[in-house]
Structures are given as C-alpha cells and as structure tokens.
Length: 281
Image (cartoon, rainbow, N blue to C red; front, top):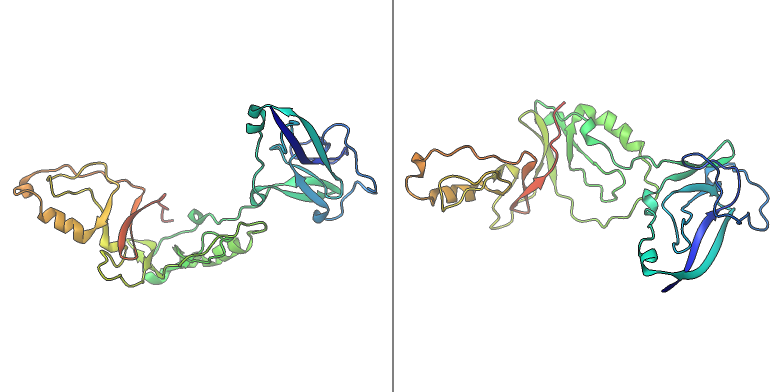
C-alpha cells in the first residue's frame, strides 16, 4: 500500500460558470478561505485555471475549471492508496497547453488558448520567378527566429497580420541552434527555400538539386520499389556505372517513390525530409 499526500487547487463553492457549463464548485465541504470578501472578478488577472482532483489518491484531474485566484484552497488528504491507483492518476497538460482563465460579466470562465503556430498551408506558394517568393517563420513562438518557410511574396501582408495576432504567453523556451542561410527560389512554379551555405570539403551536395530519391544499387538493374531513400546524383551515377553489363537492355518498371519525401541537402549531406506537400494556390 502507498501512503499519498495529495495537494491540489480546489475551486470554492460559488455560482461561477466553468468549462462545459455548471458551477465552479470544487470538492464538497470546501468554502472560501477566511478573509475572502468578494466572489466577483473585474479583470482576467483576477481568475486562475485549476485541475481539481477526481480521486483522493491523485494530485489533480484533467478537467480545467476557472475560479477566482483569491478563492483557492490547499487541501491535503491522507489515505492508503494502491500502486495501481497512483500509477493511473491523470497528468494535467503543461502550462503552455492549458486554456486561459477569463473574466466575463464578473464571473471567471475557461477560454480556449489561441493557436501559437501559423497555418502555412493557407498561403500561396505559386510563383513565376525567384522574385515572387519570400521566406517566413512558421512558428511565431519559437525564439530562434529562423525564416525558412517559402511562400509567395504577395502573401506577405496576410502573413504579417496572422503573425502579429498570435499570443505566445506561456510558450516553452527552445534552445536555439544554427539557422541555415537560405534564399527563396521559384522551382516548377512553386516557391522553395534553397541553402546558400558552402559545401564542406568532401561533401556530396551543395544544394537540394544535388540530391534525388533513388533505391538503385550496383547489384541489380532495377530499383527496389517503393523507395524512400535519398542519395546524391553523383552517387546515383556511380551506382549505375557499376551495375552488371547488359542493364541498359533490361526493361525495368518505373519505381514508385514516396510522395511525402523531399530530397534535401544540409552541411554537404543528402537526406530525406518527410513532409506533407503544400499545394500551390
């Protein structure tokens, strides 16, 4: 048996609306602490989000409730709990993923947190030349500020509007690494990002165009299919040159290549980037 001390924020008995309707009452028998003088809020900062426990063996539940920040109480319950009861206790979401508490008509209510990323698929990538393209950030709340996502330059105004509308309150701090030096280019009518960083000595590629999806080998004439492997065009030429004599006369079925694989080059190395292709609009 496990001896557990449960410490939880519990809403006080009141008539405040909460998520999904109903009242903001917490566990039975708990009232406002001594000294509480009002049950009404004036501004959003008067309110707080809590996850009241649904079991005396757990420190919290999973259903958020909104309450006055001054009307929370610490309740400690002690009882013998089985290991199974403790292991299956729910874990509330991280702070940045929790809803917000808002004051509406002098009552605390749960308000969904606005999105913190931009839906890049909503912006066109159609182009006729490199000048029709620009690079932007997909994650407004990422402090690394790497502009690496290509969109049509004509969409920049709409993008800036969407960028400024995102609230990054409570965003997780992300360690920043190196941002690749890239430029926007137009390839086959679609805006793309191309690296401008020099190829390391002995590297197999200088840009994405030096890489290709291929499962060719020097042991047989036909490629395995389907294929998700990315190699350099130079390596592909070497493999084909080393294939058995007579391969040029062999008729091979065109290999199936995964539609969600994009050949990429980084630091002189070809690799496969798995992604959902964004249609040109």
